[in-house]
Amino acid sequence: MASTGIAAVVANGSNRSVMQAATIRTAADLPEAERVMALHRALGEALDEHRPEAVAVESLMWGRNAGSAMAVARASGVILLAAAQRGIPVHEYAPLEVKMAVTGNGAAAKQDVRRALERLHGLNDVPSQPDAADAVAVALCHLQQSRQLRQAAN
Image 1 (cartoon, rainbow, N blue to C red):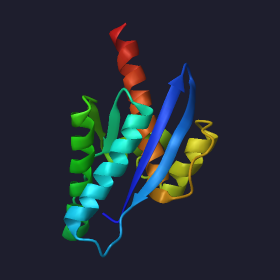
Image 2 (tube, rainbow, N blue to C red):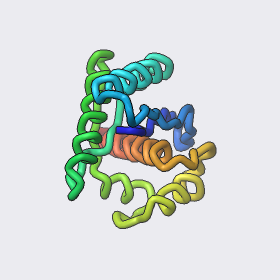
Image 3 (cartoon, rainbow, N blue to C red):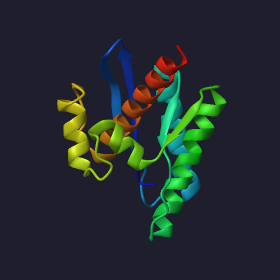
C-alpha cells in the first residue's frame, strides 16, 4: 500500500473536469497500521474538501502476488470506511469495466487509458502518476455508468 490514487471528477452536462487527482504515498518502512491510518487521514481530508456524491473504487483482482493483493485490499477497506463514515455511497468497478468505459477496449494498456482520458474524453490535468491517472479513469467510469442508469430510468 505504498501508493493509492485518488481523483475528484465533476460532470457539468456532457463536460467533465478533473477537480483533484493525486497519489497518496505512505512510507514503506512504516508499520502497516500507521500506513493505513495515514491513508485514512489523507482520504478523509479529500472527501471533506470535495464532498462527492459518490465514491468509485476499482474492485480487487486477485493475482499471483498475495502480498500485493493484501495491501490493495487494506487500502480498499480504508476507502470504504472513510466513505461510509461520511454517508457517501460506494460503487465498485472491475478493471475491465473501467478500461471499456474509458477506451472501448477491455485489454487497453495503462498508457492507452491515460491517452483516452485526454483525447477521447477531453479531460485536462490528467496526472502522469499511474495511480492518480487510474483514479481519474475509475471516476470517469462511474460518471458514465451513473449517467446511463439515470437515462434508463427516465
